[in-house]
Image (cartoon, rainbow, N blue to C red; front, side, top):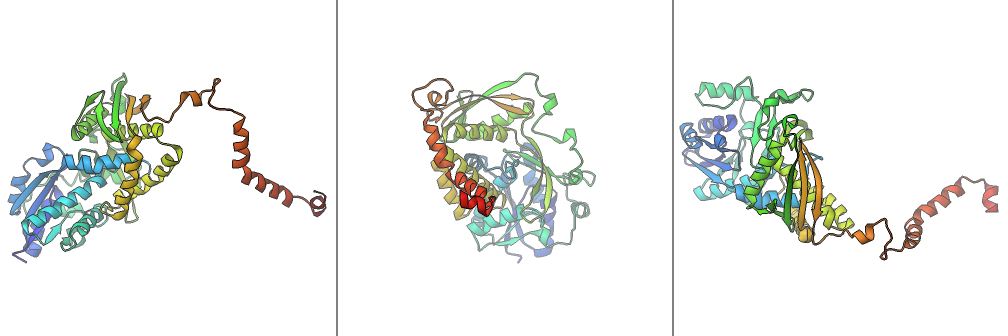
Length: 411
């Protein structure tokens, strides 16, 4: 195996730092580290090249895929309306397929035969990464050290790192896991494994405490063209900068914090704390515009599609025929989702201020409670009689069942 190359999804965190050394000792591979810049911040990316080489990698690729993540993954997700289990805006999950895609691209570029990752055997990410790899290049072998090595916990990894003089960013006293990208930041493990315990106030990084947010609301408008956001307060933004600006705006108002005990794909429940300030605002505005521009049957059916779309993302099934087919439906529904939503942001809350769209199906002349010439209220009687006919028939049956034979004979 000494001549074989393995591409490692490398973050420079505890797990992947240990994995570099472990792969060398276990298999003797030449290790090519790949770090995907998905907006985790300069602090996490700083010094990765030196660290990867120092711990044993032969080379490292740091790939900026932020634009691709926003335009090809996040924005389609926003258009779909996907939310997992009523709260989670899929910040970690939506980044995994594009990272998996990049791993395959680099593996093919350097001639690697193996791809390795640091996802645990209990989590969702192992599935997400490996489904992407299988879909895009099924010839690549996959190694998941957490499913092979003898370490039972992150504390074991910390001990190993100390023995091998591997610099690590966490300590045994505070070993909770953090995942950050341009869409969100998540916290899991450690003290958070007790669902009865409130997270520490100083843990949050993207949002201020809503109690400490400004005492005056901020007005914000988001403009969409066919379901795609392009302007804030009338000023046009490129996709990536729009998301980053929304993060800044939402963060200072304490918007986008959730505490969720969710159902993982493997069947267990886990507790996660998420911050998604910009995504919360953007998803809220998009939903409001859809309600304003889509007909009832399409909007209601699209809610069903959104649930399935969220499951596909969460389960790692992005590169599937079903997701591609649902995208076709979603793109069709977005043809009239054009307009602007005005909002007020205040201490963790978003309130609609106004709506405008050239495609709105709201007709004030029809909806008014005042006198109008478009709707004859007498027509409602026939609608009620016909639409309620099954209820009438069932009611007659129930009445008949309750009658005595004598009463039935007389009726």
